[in-house]
Image (tube, rainbow, N blue to C red):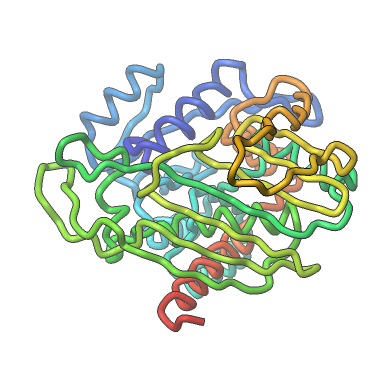
Amino acid sequence: MNGVTGRMGLNQHLVRSIVAIRQQGGVTLPGGGTVVPDPILVGRSEAKLREIARAHDIQRVSTDLDRCLANPADAIYFDATLTSARVDHVRRAIAAGKHVYCEKPLAPTTAEALDLARAAERAKVKHGVVQDKLFLPGIRKLKQLVDDGFFGRILSVRGEFGYWVFEGDDQPAQRPSWNYRKEDGGGIILDMFAHWRYLLDHTFGAVRAVQCTGATHIPERVDENGRRYTATADDAAYATFLLEGDVIVQFNSSWTVRVYRDDLLQIQVDGTLGSAVAGLRTCKTQSRAATPRPVWNPDEPNPFDFYDQWRDVPDDGVAANAFRVQWEMFLRHVAADEPFPHDFVEGAKGVQLAELGLESWVERR
């Protein structure tokens, strides 16, 4: 596991996924066996790695990636490092014959992402990319509504994602400074459009076109060492996607927005027979029969409680962490050859959408 000293690598992939899987005794395989992951933590700081390992009862750490890749006993390489470093790491892992699972975006460019996909296929190693949003309880409920025909003909989708990331002067920034440097693989378009691609493709229909305007609203920030630096990457993106079936999607992604909604991610779907609003865990619906008939009258107080007219979609059981669910799928994919659709080609589609979003912004088309 390379990159576990970072926020996502540590919290979601190590602690809430691999450590949790180890604590439950491993992943049960279809034939009745069990696979228990035995991680070796890889990174640049041995002191940080040892501290993390001690905290989570992990025995192995290393600062030598190539030596780790040379060990035939470790079948899987996982990467949650900087986007700018991922291609090199993954290419070396494939050359060493490792199955590879990694964070998104798979690569800075579509060409590099497809090159990794072809290399993995030639080497006959299994490969996967994190697509965690598909396994969130709120999105799963939304997908079930689509499959059940609740919406009738889907007309439009509106998404709001983001929160205020502090500049790093009076309060520490919640995200590493590289996120705001284009030369280091930063930018919200490259980061988040990979998510929107698989979420839209697998929930509502394939993305056919994008129109995007990005922005660097905060031009200067303060890094982890207290030094001011120029932000060269986009910190907000305002996009319209066209899906198959002429479904129109509007999506705002921003690290410069203050949250006045139910969740950090909120998606509203409107159809001829009903609408739904989903967050990370919850989903609410309003059917055509229950749709109110508001009257526009700015001279009188609003008589409607619009929120009260929506109904909760019930939970379908205890939902595990979305990252852990996908980790268990990938472990079964490697150990028992179970299907795993979230491969490098899927990852390349996310990079493609980000590239086209950036192109749309530059060319204003």
